[in-house]
Amino acid sequence: MSEQTLSRASGRSPAAAQPGGGPARNTLKSIGIVVAAGAVGLLTASSLPVPMALAAALAVFCIGMWATAAAPEYWTALVFFLVAVLSGIAPPQTVFSGFYSSTFWLLFGGIILGASIRYTGLGARMAAALSGMLGTRYSKVITGVTAFSLALAFVMPSSIGRIVLLLPIVIGLADHMGYGAGANGRTGMIAAAAFGTFLPAFTILPANAPNMIMAGMAETLYGARFSYWGYLLAHFPVLGLLKTGVLVVLILKMFPDGDPQRQPAAHDRATAMTPAEKRLALVLALCLALWLTDALHQISPGWIALAAALYCLWPASGLTSKKCINEEVNYASLFFVAGILGLGAVISSTGLGEAVVAGLSGHADFSVDRPVWNVVMLTGISTVVAMITNLPGVPAVMTPMAEKLAVLTGLPLTTVLMTQVLAFSNVFLPYQAPPLIMAMQLGNLPAGAVARLCLALFVIGLVVLLPLDLVWWHVLGLV
Image 1 (spheres, rainbow, N blue to C red):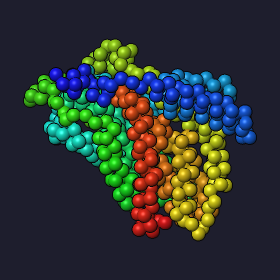
Image 2 (tube, rainbow, N blue to C red; image 1 turned 90 degrees about the vertical axis):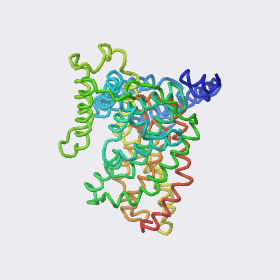
Image 3 (cartoon, rainbow, N blue to C red; image 1 turned 90 degrees about the horizontal axis):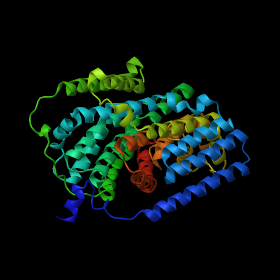
Image 4 (cartoon, rainbow, N blue to C red; image 1 turned 45 degrees about the vertical axis):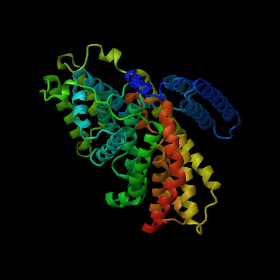
């Protein structure tokens, strides 16, 4: 047998089968230690108020540890809970706010739904049906998964909900096509689904949380309203469509693999759905319908997912194994997500984000005679805020300051607000984006692979897509 065949049979791509990685791992751990030391230095040398300085030190430590993978993600999250509570930088209800956030319970519900899809065999059936539409070439599979994921963003508003729905199906599709655990093809397909339904969706107004936070705050504070089509026209051609093409090329380059080798499956034949599959299909259809209409009934996607999980876990439903809650729930990922959400809440409550914006604005050298420079600097400030807090933190911090920044720069208020999109659509590392964190946990994506893809997209976004978007804005009269 050839090396590729042996690797595929073991569930790994040829690239994944190569030894190594030890020195790089040690280097990352060393970086983590340096970051931790830097956090202590920041705390002792900072002239910020004590609560804000403590929040800054804790943020530097946690973000550094998550970014370098110097320790398991859940360990850093638990350190955050302990230090934040003992130091008193925020009330316990703020520190632990991640546990009662809708996002946390949406992840929990997604894990249970994923287990049900695997247990009942519905995922294998759906994967077999989809595989015939994606062609027989690996490049077409990645392109098709990405395009389908982007299309879903136009009809389903919650990015985390889309990921919860998509990933179990794509995982089953990868199994069906012969991409086992550890295979580049499997990683590429899951990354295509997660990134494809998340990053370009920043250009579709109701499709991601930061978009809606910015639009809601802008209307509340300034009476400024963004139309669906105006927002789409301003951002989708470059940050949506073109970035999707860049994403496909990067995935094919970073996660190369052979063409699909479809595995024979019972669902390839025309067999009737089992009663359990029918019940689960009904549950998923109800979830999708409720997620699509959340603007009408005002029930958060997280509580819808929790209700679905409760039904799936009910022994009489027959949709999960009896040991599902003990053996198939990744509690480490739940602690990780709660930690990230709690850190963002602590940073917001201490006023650290606003202090960073005020400090950076003082050094930005704004001038009414240099509109392009002003847009670049505003984007840079928002990018820093996204690194310190998270992507939803950008509109929460920047929108209340937009009117003041418009006066300083001479730019229209709409343009100042739109610069946030340039920042929160360009993810530096996955810790900034709860949907990507959820995709990593649900899809068992390697943290290093996701980080490399984020960094590559971030650099291309700054060097290529940002200038092109500014040219497009000039055509539209925004700059």
